[in-house]
Amino acid sequence: HGADDNASGVAGLLELARMLSSPKPPRRTIVFIAFSGEEEGLIGSNFYVNHPVVPLMNTVAMINMDMIGRLKGKKLIVGGVGTAQEWRSMIDADNSMQSMTVSLNSPISASATLSSKFPIVVGTNGQPVVTLDPAKQFDLTLNEDGYGPSDHSSFYAKQVPVLFFWTGNHDDYHKPSDTADKINYEGEARVVSFAAGIVSDIDRSDKRPTYAVAKSESQGRSTGFRVYLGTIPNYADSNDGLKLDGVRDDSPASKAGLKAGDKIVKMAGREVKNVYDYTYALGEMKAGQEYEVEVVRGSERLTLKITPAKR
Image (cartoon, rainbow, N blue to C red; front, side, top):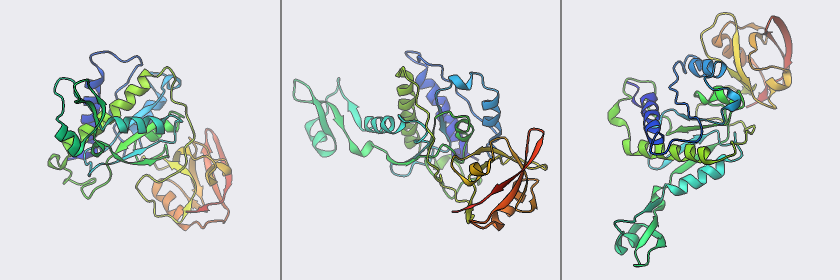
């Protein structure tokens, strides 16, 4: 049924568009896109970054909402926080705003204030005007990496700052049991409101978020391999090699001279025609041992030397 993956993200996209369309239009251009073909190799987002409706040099950030319908308690995962210098402070400020309530027309009673909310602005009548409820703040898991298991990877590979909102994995992932009755609707509304705050902050600022190279981290899906190369594979079906969407900075792949757009055709003595051949070769490699990797780059076929690192 795909209620969480990713009808929740599409619903959030539509609601975010509604919220930001009134009453005052945004200063910046905001493009709303629902990508397809992510599981087949980021096909939609990869196509967009190579054929954008707005030049990527003018694209200041990409906000991704993929699986935001299963908020458990207050736990929200935000990826990409290392891709712009401003993200952490912006996220902290907007998370604090989640806990604030402004009550001008119907003052909150003193008993309600004492039981759960803390007054931070008090009116002349002694009643709180602005209150703080810590229970409404998200319990955030912040992930630095700009690469991850969703469409924001395509943008980060083009040096666009990204943020990835995700409420986490569950037993219904990629199963027909991912049904609408299991969606946490109130929780999703809170996630969308949080995302709207971030977008509004970007819109109000005269300065664009400052792109940064993020620290490499796992975003919830283990590869199971003993070695690390630092390649970002394109998982689309192929029979003539494995194309790379990106290469992590200061990784074995980067040191070997591999680049985004390269197509690996042979690695560690194994012919590579698709992602399965690539994973078999990767599984046979040992950390600290040098291997040859052959790539097609444009019209050239190059042989490079790569030394995997221990994972």
